[in-house]
Image (cartoon, one colour):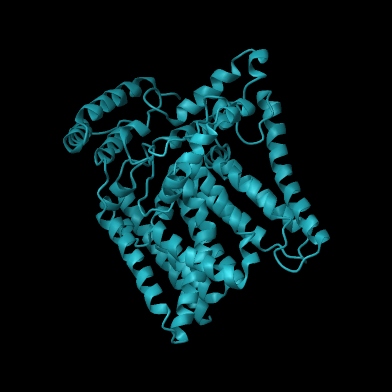
Length: 494
């Protein structure tokens, strides 16, 4: 083995050991047997698939890919978690290979080191959520798309489109990457003729069309409606336009399966309600009505603060409770890398390429701009911004490699830049360990909600509910939330 191969093997081994240690800690928590939020909808999707009901509204309202994945595994939670952990390690290797191909061996190793040290990856691998598979497919599409050159065949371009479309069906918010990628495809990335660029674009669009077309035909045959990605009902997908509506863990941002504020089931019910209308009433609704309802000016006003929030170090995981798990798992708490540190190194790397090879940024940009649009239009949460790391980790590798090159050349410029990078790293690492959530009651509430879905010790649930009220910044709201939680258990969908 070469030195680089030994380092790669060592980093992947470290990643595997961290995952094993974390899963041993995670087994003592209730979430595998008592999944929350979107996990419950995905399990419902899987049950409908197994029952042969491929036209169920849950498969139209939310990304269907993960429901089919769970159905193929017999809805086995631990098997899904084991596969996702392996997929996560495989994604790290693919990231290293892609970065090495585009930016050199040093950049590849730095990108992999950042990947292994970022705690959100094992966190999502342990959940019955589509983040891990969505990221892996998005990274696969990213690797293929950035490999397209003048000599690439149209089949390779079609494969890039096909994999990206599959990623969208696994994580629907990746749809915003698609238009940016289609726009980037015909641009000149290197010395290429118009014919070569047209062939790349045609192949890429063909791959997208094959998957989305097949999905639409499938829904037409099973649900009597052509749905290439998601069924868009006017009340199902709400665009947030307030610059002050940042998710911070507050109770007003989450809902249970049968009542309360917005939840995954609200989206399913909105689609079900819309499908039940007479055809004449539905003809003027759907995608166009949803697009027309967007407050464009409000979204533009909200954009600057939301862009800044997208790159902050705090991980707003929306469902479950990341910082609660970090406190409960020493292995997860050992992950030092923050999103803001990766973003800072990536900004440095983007600056390096902007000066030396600006066209190399063109095939990378869709994974930044598309995901940024999601965060601006919806919410700058951890699960929405995660696929941006396909591009940011690569650019972070470029930035880190450039710093090391300055150091080797004894350039004095590297000192202030390295100090700034170290300060951002230490700040993010400290925030990971010492961050106190604004709503500490969330951890106790998710624990209680999870325990209530399985055989449990009533005293343990009561303790968590009492602690939730005791530590809450708004005890009245927490008490009302607890009452809604108790009521929801009596009317949970199958």
